[in-house]
Image 1 (cartoon, one colour):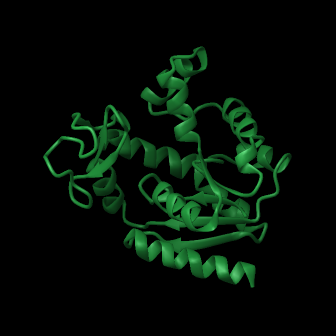
Image 2: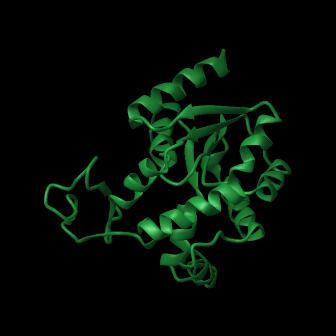
Length: 213
């Protein structure tokens, strides 16, 4: 099982990936996690990526592709994986085809931008252990404090409303064309992602069962 999750920011790609990995025995590969690790370690690459992300821009294709290719060569990815946040452009998708055979592309569709804005702007992250909360859907027991370690919760810069709108604009310009790219190859499947994570997961499992059948 080699799957790509497509969808705008806030569509729930990361949440669904976690649930699928738990039950299907595959690994989640998120370019966002790869980038954040590089930034936290303050490597030369991390410093370069940090400037790009802070400007609300996408990391250059060649840089992203090289990082993903290296990650897919690791042992845990050989039995199957979910790509979350990659590819984001046609150039990245074409590059991916040269070294991987993707079996399914799932498009998590949300037509109402307000749902996305509410999901992302309400997200809070622990600055210490990186636990994720939401002020409405998954609030901490004590306001602005992490349940796990007690440290303060923060709002990531890319979860501020102006940054969210900018991310949506970038998605529509550069990433949405991937829907047609994979539809033309006969491996695209669309799921309504505006419901709860459980509803989206049930839709995915039905899709996976059909694909196996």
